[in-house]
Image 1 (cartoon, rainbow, N blue to C red):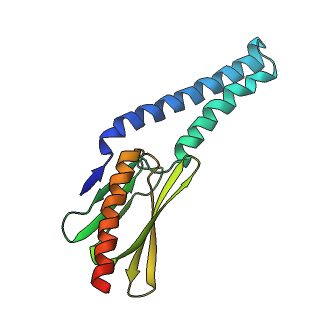
Image 2 (cartoon, helix red, strand yellow; image 1 turned 90 degrees about the horizontal axis):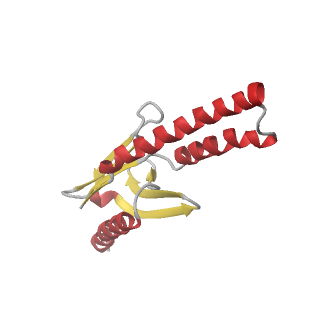
Length: 158
């Protein structure tokens, strides 16, 4: 099964650009109000707080693009940011039989996928992927595919 939200990258780029422009205009409006016009009182801090808070929330959600491929004998996970220099992209590929379990954690608006795989050196390793930008349908498809792999692995180990 293949799962990807790469086709939404242009929408994420648009939202990011819009938020950056809002932040820049907010800073300009704040500075103009403070040093030139004095039209708004203490409420002028809203020009700074709201756009910057929205930009921070956008980036706290994590990497926007998530790709998953379970075709063949290996599981392939890719997780990257729309802005390449902001964060290192993740790319992991390992055989299906190494998958032990997975867990999806939701905290407010942030969603993370934790995948536990068997490892020769340490016994098991936990890999973390950010899936906040996946739709509920995509998350359900991901769960279905991972459940199938985990179930097959448990049957083969017993």
